[in-house]
Length: 297
Length: 244
Ligand SMILES: Nc1ncnc2c1ncn2[C@@H]1O[C@H](COP(=O)(O)OP(=O)(O)OP(=O)(O)O)[C@@H](O)[C@H]1O
Ligand SMILES: [Mg+2]
Image: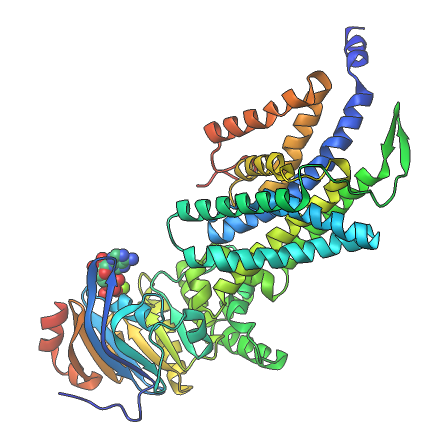
């Protein structure tokens, strides 16, 4: 009797809804964090401009959507343009700093983030823009009309991450990226053009951030500060997942997003954010090499 | 006492000075290696043997002096370009890509432009023939190999570049006698294939056996240079510089 009472008191419908919500945000977050952790792993650079690449992706999505009306084209073009921009940023600001004190690269990427943010403010103004989702269908989930588009976001993010994973695992350039991540010097000695591998990795990370910006754009307004919340969370995910560990980051993104989504059942979403900080602090205290990484021997 | 190389040198290092930060390590190293020649580089610990190889490979930049490959200057050239020009490097600590499989380790040197699939297969067949254990372990992560297997992989990986010369840093360090003789066999094989080798070793008998000429370094400079067969008959020099 007691047990049934407890089972009845648990809001199963809300838990299911929040599980879906958590996975959707988790996949977007994983897409952002994958790029961040790739860049950190390969060149020891903490990219403070990552949120602005996400934001620029969303703005380019807005522009392309306004001119062509095609969401998928907007997604593609935003990804490519921001990837190229990322390559340019890497060549101009980070390549000369390779091997220097990490502080210099932090300052450099922080500078880039300020420039991009203010450029967006100057170019697009303070009023949030809207990206229209490519389709507006809903399905019924208990008392909710749940948008299909959200599930598509999760699926597409998973597909992009999965594609990236395959690219890393198989094929010449994936081996180049992994070899460079493991031993930059030896990679060079084997004829791998490490400076260009760094540029390519930064471009890939930037493109993934832009793709998440466009995908997520329809759920929030697009404005010049939209990158801030996400990048903060992505940093937490990268630390909790083990700096530079791609699988760990993806697991941490989903884990933290689910926890926040469940917490939001009982507390306000703004308070639920605290959950990720608690996870971060506990990770740093007890497993500083990452929550999903086997403890190094 | 100068002993000329048979032909124009493949690698010519001339009066090279190298620093790590403020510490002056190489004080004007001069040496050369002819095409297809095996040359030993001996010296006590810390005299700058590895630094000499790193300087040739472009991993540290010399402040003075010049290095030439086939008569063209390569001083300060990035290592990946040197690798593409045919300089293979097998470092002291092997530096296997630990999380890459044996096959992927080999592919880092194999996936170059202009290498046909047949050529790739031929190169792989060749090293798998010399090192059958690598064929057995081709799908295993490099970091899980034994020390001797890692050394074989490091040499095999350099061979993937079809190098004109291999800079080989203490290949027998820490290996069992059986492994040591395998390494000396592969040096002979490479020699027969006309691959030049600049061999840094602590194992003096092996070096004298494998090399044609030997340089002996002391405190960042080359102090002695002789044909290997001369040194074999002259223990005094070896004793003076190496204390063995
Ligand atoms: N990265 C570095 N930074 C500073 N000093 C270094 C560095 N690498 C080597 N040294 C110093 O340079 C000197 C020469 O080192 P090197 O490794 O070339 O010697 P070696 O002849 O190869 O010695 P061993 O036989 O022990 O391998 C040593 O005094 C060493 O301490
Ligand atoms: Mg050494």
